Every structure is written in C-alpha cells, then in structure tokens.
Length: 567
Ligand SMILES: Cc1cc2nc3c(=O)[nH]c(=O)nc-3n(C[C@H](O)[C@H](O)[C@H](O)COP(=O)(O)OP(=O)(O)OC[C@H]3O[C@@H](n4cnc5c(N)ncnc54)[C@H](O)[C@@H]3O)c2cc1C
Image 1: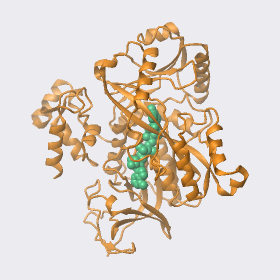
Image 2: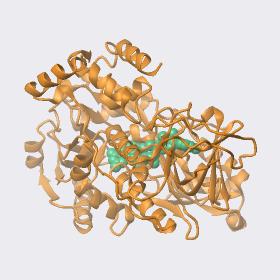
Image 3: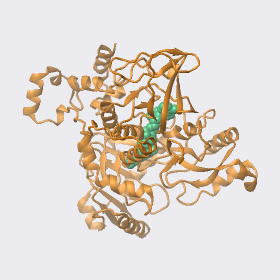
Image 4: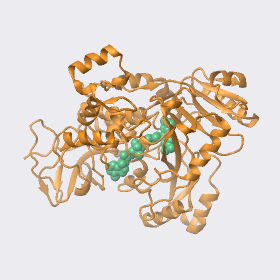
C-alpha cells in the first residue's frame, strides 16, 4: 500500500499558475496544478489587452518595475523557447495637448530611470509619419521600441504544456475548496463535483483509494510511479508540503482559508472591441492615448493574429452578493455604455478606424487589491459604515489605477468583513502583492493585474525559487525549457505545407475558412497535454472561430472532432 504526496500544489491555471508550475518543474519536486474550470486560461488571462509592457508606466524601485523591464527585454527569448508567436511592434503613447505631453515626458523620464531602452519623445509630425491614421490633431508622442504583443492564451497554454511535459500533473475541474495545515504542510481538498473526471492532463487516472476521513489509504501506484491523490468519500485530498496560490480573482478567498486576510480584491471591469484582420495595417504600433481631460484613454493593439484590439473601458462591477466575488463569468460580459464610450474615443483618436470590421466584443475583470486592516484597529476608525464611505471617498489619486469601486462591491466586502472580522483600508496596493510568511511554504499572488501577463514568467520563477529554497529542493536535471511550436498551416511556406499534407492529409482539410485552420491542427489541439475539451479550448489552441464568421462555419466540424476524439 503506497501513498504518494505532492511537494507543491499550485492553485489556479491562469498565466501565473501555469508559469509557477513551469518554473517549479525546474526543481526535483512533485508538483500538481489544480484548476477549477474545464480548461486552463479561462479567467483574467484570457481577457486582457495582450501587451508586453516595457516598464515606462511603473514606479522606479518597485518589484513590478524590476520584473517588467527584465521580462520585456527577455520576452523574445521566452517566446522562442516556448514556441509562441510574439510581435515586438513598439508602442506610441499619444496626447492632444500640453497636459498630456507633460505626462509623456514624465513617463519618458521614469522609463529611462527604470532601464527602458530606446524610448524617446516624438513630435506631432513624427507621430503622423509612423502612424498616419492617428487624428491629425495629435500633439506629441512617446515612442517605446521594446513594447510588444502576444496571444495571452497561447503563452499560458504553452507554459502549461511545458510544465506537464516536465512532469507537472495538471488537474482540471479541480477546485481547491478547502485548505488546512497538516504536520507535513497542507491538505488541499477538492470536492467530488469539482474533482477531475478521472484523468489528469498527463492521462493518468487520479481517482484512487477511498477514505471517509481523508486519512492515508491504499492508493495503488500506477505503473509509471505517478502520484495518485487519495480520494475520500466525495473529496479528493491532496497532501502537500507547499502551496502556490494563483487563484486570480479568488486568490484572497483562497488565502483566507489558511491565513488572516491582509489584502482583499475589489474587482472592476472593462469592455473591448476586436476588429477583423481586414483592418490589419491600420495601426502598426500599440497606441496608448493619454487624454487631456482626466479619465481613461484608449488603447489600440495590432495583435499577432492580425486583428486590432480596442479598449478597455473602466466600469463598476456588480458582484455576486452571496460570494463577495464576481460569479464565474460575471464581468466578462460587455455593456452598451462601455462599448459606446469606446466608439466615441475612437472617433477622437483614430477617426478612420473601420469599425464596420468589428467582429467581437468582450469584457474583462480587474482584481484591484486593497490592504486589509485587522478588527483590532476598528475602534480607531469609527463605525463600519463610516469606514466604507471613507474608503470610497478617500481613495488616493491613482489609488485605484484601473478603476472605481461600486457600492455593491463595498457592501459585499463589508459583509465578508463581518464574517472574517477584518476591515479594508483605503490603501490600494500599487506593487505586486505577494503574500508569504517566513516560516511557511505558502505563497499567494493577490490581485496581480497589469503587467501580470508581461511578468508571468518572472512571478512564476519568484514563487518557484522561494518554494525550492524552503523545501531544500535540488534542480531537476531532466528539465527541458523548450516546447515545440504548434503547427500553423496557414503560416507555412507552400512547399512545407505540401510535404505536411503528403505525410498527413488531415492538414489539408480546412475546418476554419476564415483563418485557414485545418483538421490536423484541431486534432493537435485536442490531443495536446493538456488538450482541448471545449470549443473555446480548440479556439485557444488552434485558432478556430477567431475569424470574421466567429465560428459560424467551423463550429459543427470542431464539435464532431471533439466528440470523436473524446468519447
Ligand atoms: C482588463 C485587463 C487588462 C490587462 N492587460 C494586460 C496587458 O496588456 N499586459 C499585461 O502584462 N498584463 C495585463 N493584465 C494583467 C494580466 O492579465 C493578469 O495579471 C494575469 O492574467 C493574471 O493571471 P492569474 O493567473 O493571476 O489569474 P487568472 O487568469 O484569472 O487565473 C486564475 C485561475 O484560478 C482559477 N481558480 C480560482 N479559484 C480557484 C480554486 N479555488 N481552485 C482552483 N482554481 C481556482 C480560476 O478559474 C482561474 O483559471 C490585464 C488584466 C486585466 C484585468
């Protein structure tokens, strides 16, 4: 009778969780990743602006800045290693008057201090030469050559594949419902309805012996020596020496299972438009617009897929009153008001942008982190209602850099506050908030927003190195940081395509007409480890449904392939 435990459990399969897992695989550790959804990259990591930031926007001396500058300067190398497409298109921040120009000059000075390379101010004429479709009223620009763009889900899934290939077990439909301390570290429980349906990404069965009490039971080791978590009645129990909490919008809730709350997430939301590839070339750089009036400017991104991304707005988010968090998909919808405000900004900034080529809109949720004060300080602050009003009124300028906070959000935090006996301070957290305690191997990333995509590998490495140090882990001598790029038939030269189709005719059968994605690529997506089990999963891996018809043509065929491969 054998029972094998994990050394590290990573909670959450977004960019941070997948990169934490990938970096943990550099060590001789048994690692499992738990993701509550049916696939990876289904949270914030799939809905964002897709920009690789250079480090001009963040304050000197912060961890965020140090990581962002390093990350952007090494991003090409990271993407080459993971076989991920990356476009180092550069960015131009534009303004329409002297106030905005002052902001640009400050950013240039800040960026230079931060170590950003090659940034410089542009005159109106220079901006128009580089970006002729920007409004002729443009006043000045700030050019930053190191800014880039990447497909967030391509990056995230590549990190996960690389982690799985290096031995990390990836468990989907596995929500960490409860976490408690144990003599050996922590016990993470996944209720049956969340437990993976019998298979981890490595293809191993995860269900094993039965224990009503959650104590160690027989769990036949698989022939491969694969770790098998113990399955209690209705609960899968993972014993682990360490936890890396990357639960995104829920990271504070996960942290509070074990620790006193220190940072609480108060989310808000934003809207985006996506333009078809027919608009490709209208802009060549990432365009940031610094508005003359206070408020949110516009961002335009020429994506690696050839689309143009427009957004995001900034709007309050109505949260699930019972949960104190947005329900799974809440916030990811769009609002008419938000989309209309994007259109009016477009008219001002890039008046000729062909909005008739809009093929999609989507919403995104930001995890604004706020410090939490303990109830012991409550008397010093007065009654709760007063504190909450105070929170709203006294958010310092720039305190919620990406958005306001709804009354509903505050009320929900108040309800949770009572339950947890904590109070929210008026201090938003402007640096990455990494919560860890010296004497425990439990690291939490709470409220990591922009530039979290840019810094995902750096944050993952940070977590892995800290955990490895605490567990005295040795390097994994078999670790291979490389992942083969997936086949993309429509990006191949004709002679290579021809040879491929001769080898496997499935690469000659078009499934998605808009993007020229073939049956072979859809099958690759489903057979990957971890592979796609949904239409979105295939879309994120193979690119079906991303074109002008948004899946109108390919959905049926993709479904048939999913069914034939999975059932
Ligand atoms: C609007 C917006 C725009 C942005 N634009 C940029 C940008 O252009 N460039 C940039 O660098 N950064 C950007 N960011 C930041 C970046 O997107 C995030 O920092 C990053 O995606 C965070 O990843 P994550 O893994 O922490 O969260 P997520 O991607 O949300 O992943 C968390 C995962 O945890 C899972 N989970 C939750 N609870 C549990 C549980 N109990 N058990 C198991 N699993 C659980 C969730 O299902 C989810 O999959 C943007 C963010 C936002 C919101």
